[in-house]
Image (cartoon, rainbow, N blue to C red):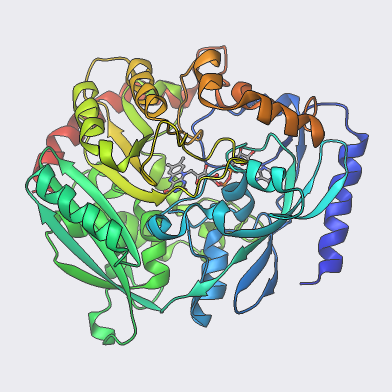
Length: 494
Ligand SMILES: Cc1cc2nc3c(=O)[nH]c(=O)nc-3n(C[C@H](O)[C@H](O)[C@H](O)COP(=O)(O)OP(=O)(O)OC[C@H]3O[C@@H](n4cnc5c(N)ncnc54)[C@H](O)[C@@H]3O)c2cc1C
């Protein structure tokens, strides 16, 4: 794909922005729990045709902004190259990961996705095209863009670093019956940086599993859980959580499958929340394997229907605000040294298990605005994403639970991912982040008045109470279904 064609597409975006007099947004539905009705009143810029990889070299990949992580991995892994820090979702886009958030199990070594971006292009709110924004060229925008969630401009191109990888990984599952023994080993492994990937799960109180994955050079094909894309009976081996529940000590996967391990199951979504034993076969076997690739393909330009495997799955556990009352899908930012406190707070507020614990090294830079800790309040360089996704199981309002979590993160000088439900007030929000810095760069790069303000955007809620068919069906069937799942959970996670 040529840069010439790319430049034509960018010019088109720029021309339509120049003619525009309303607020601007992308036409992406994306990945978040927000109500997206606000998009109806704004000019929606179509980024759906920015799906080409422009250059692939030994040490970098240059992509149009709607290229998905799945597409990148399929291009780079056969060449034994990989973006250092990848999010856990194959149809997240490189533009979305830069503008929003991108982290995964290698982030404890390589930081966030945006820490590995070399440069990017962006069309500003007045239609100007800014090329090659980097650490040395408009560095305020380079460092400031992370976590602005589409409120700075339309990103059109992202160039990222690549590092060496192997085509297979060995995944070890290490189980612990007390927080102390788990934490000791987790902390040691993080400090040693001895694993290529590391994450952990709190399965239930005092029951933890560390999942460490490492590249392997030589592995016998019979040892690899899945060897071809449409292996009907084996797709379920992708679910990390199924392996934990089955008390596996280790498994081998293709690196590509490891990186897409949550795409089929949305963390533990399918495994725990699809009732009964046929769940693995129905979802993994039939849906994932037999459905034409055209439908499931994660690239917007390719998958005509853009039904992501991941979000088909996630839809079972998250959704609109009606579900919010039954289900939690929230992430706490936690300094490594405060994990125990965070777990205790979560236990006080909800009985939701399992929980995902993903370490990230926070490469602080004073020009960053949203995606970094406050070093004066958090000295830990390693921060954790504590993901609480599942049935709430208490009568405490979701809003109160989320507010308690937000307070914990903010009191510890840590941010949260704005894709999950946000309940903080305007004052709390701007006490945490530097409003002046945000507004200055919005002014300087013509975002002000052209793109929605971040607080308004991430807190946007439809004023009308939802009462559509989906909500009614959920209320009718959902409560019973959740009850059933609860009684199932004990049996499944032994
Ligand atoms: C169930 C669930 C699980 C998740 N798990 C993880 C996880 O494991 N790791 C992780 O890192 N993240 C996770 N996320 C968050 C997700 O990665 C981020 O929200 C990411 O930004 C999504 O990328 P996307 O390409 O889908 O972007 P979108 O959701 O489309 O966009 C994210 C934001 O960026 C803006 N944006 C998108 N494209 C552009 C562009 N071209 N120019 C300017 N702005 C743009 C959008 O306006 C939006 O505000 C999860 C989210 C959900 C809902």
